[in-house]
Amino acid sequence: MLRNRLFFFLSLLASGALLSFFAVKSKATVQMPATLSSAFQLLGKPIKTIDRSLTKLLPINDLDEKRLGDSIALRYESYSDPTNPDQIYLKNLVDNLSAGNSKNFEYRVFIMDTSSPNAFAMPGGVLFVTKGLLSMVKSEAELAAILGHEIGHVELSHCMDGVRGELLSRKIGAASLGEFADIAVGLFIKPSFGKNQEDEADQYGYELLRREKYDPYAMGRTFRRLKEATGSGEGTLSPIEEYFMTHPYLEHRSEKFTEMAKKEEEGSYYLGAKNLNERSSRYEHEYEEEFVKR
Ligand SMILES: [Zn+2]
Image 1 (cartoon, protein in one colour):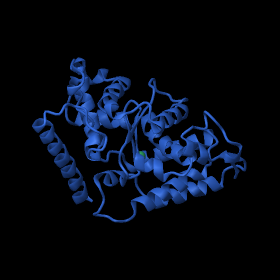
Image 2 (cartoon, protein in one colour; image 1 turned 90 degrees about the vertical axis):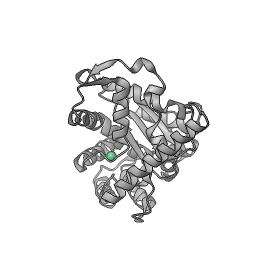
Image 3 (cartoon, helix red, strand yellow; image 1 turned 45 degrees about the vertical axis):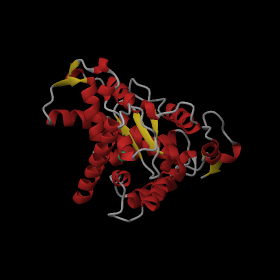
């Protein structure tokens, strides 16, 4: 496990170093094509290369999650195409799923051009979804299960707590917003949540499915698909898959949430396979045939 983690960091460092080398050699600017190494995409672009107005020194106590999220999002905006149907769909879904959120910010979602199914969250409601995840799920309910889990990490302050904890352990009392964002991104490309936090995020995602009347079986089914997709090929995992494996115990989670779904009241629940196919969320258009009796 440790060796794998070391491999993960070395891969990241290697890809970063290689890319910086090319950037210098070819005098390339900051615009990176989305097909570049996914590990590099995870890092995004250092904030200082984009916006020099974020260099003002800020005490850690004044670090506001919304502003931190804004500066993290800045790193990734050049990878995002607001006219892409996947992007529009995800944004609409996330806006609706996070509508009752307790934080003072709007969620952002970015798509990563990576075939491994994966999703993760950063402070300030900055979510990432891979193309692999979009093609793995078979209904909007399944996608909502994953998004709900990630929204849970933000709403339950796991993301912000992680950053604060890291800043304190590094004895960083003050830094610029850009530096805070650099640290936060560096932190979230490596495994950072404990088992309790994962359980809490699962529960949050499940409650979100219930609240929105999505098929409650979607949670268990999604974990099963993830388990099958990531397989058991330890040692052959890409860095992204390695990251993903920090979402623990997929088999156990699948069984747990399938059992919970069995105990739900009988009723009509939404699947949204057609919505997913058409990249048009249920909040835009509900189809009669997508309601199933459970
Ligand atoms: Zn998680």
